[in-house]
Length: 111
Image (cartoon, rainbow, N blue to C red):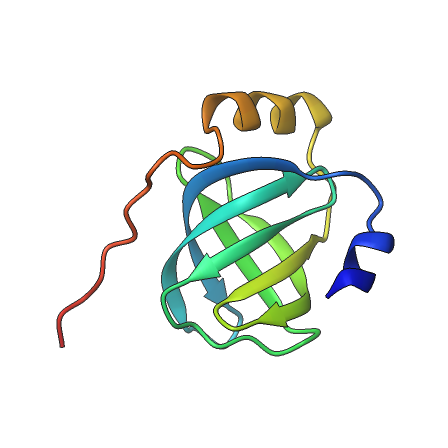
């Protein structure tokens, strides 16, 4: 995964932001973003399975949905490259409003 850092277009800001993640096949899960840049993010889900190159839609709490492509996978975490870059001041605002380590509480379903 170290090579993923070398290929980034911009540095990511640490944050913890609750979101929903949905694949284009219709599978969805609660998630959270743990890193963010104008060009992408790291997303962690409870159990949604990703494929490299798959398209996903991320809906962070309080924001519009963001389309992206899975670029790397490590367990239940994945790197997402956004289809359209985010406005840099939005990234700055979100990283200061949702600092890394703030609990977000992904709800676990009981089966």
